[in-house]
Length: 314
Image (cartoon, rainbow, N blue to C red; front, side):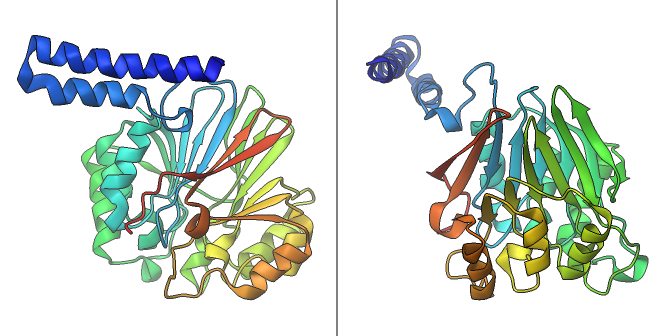
């Protein structure tokens, strides 16, 4: 009954905005109507006042990666920003989700499917801190996407902090964000420079792997005695290069999220990776099938919502 009243109230708000617009100024009618519609969006896609849960959005950016974390403390973290093609749509979605500032921005590694929209994000939102891994000069990408990101950061007079294992970038009010990788200064594959982030929310833990592969996983296993997590964002889009049996056993997640594009050219996720997860009894969520995925955490439980709006181009 309460839900029905809320919907009816939202309808009245939209109708009132529409009528008021025409009464005041016909030219402003569309703007007023849009404002009313925005206020009537579903709860998961609009700012609904003070939030007491931590919200982790695994954004559907197609064959790419982007995760938005809205902490119960009010801080916002964005890990990666999808592809160049989805840059504008990603920024629009962040605004619809109530994001007005990004306190912590993490570029796990400089591949276009992870930093493609980040220059637009930096230009459109106030940014607190930016973390990126240090890449040896000989391996630094010369892509236009990477150059645009560096230019956007420089134009705001901001500095980039090197992200590496052993760093804690947030620790307050029962919420902690720390980096488990990279652990080495040189890898043959750029994916292994990925910043691997562990979010602790009360009793629950979320692990974000970027594109980290087995070399990085082995290093993490050597250093971390308590790797267990509740939700694992699989490395490298569920590729065969990541989520090894040993790593999966140590992480022991209840749920796993795979970010990949519909009918992508890479065969992601790999069938063997999916089979490993299934054999371990892990609940699998995929952005190519379930669009944007929301994990809502109150510190003791994690609840999932699927089928939320997609940033990916159809």
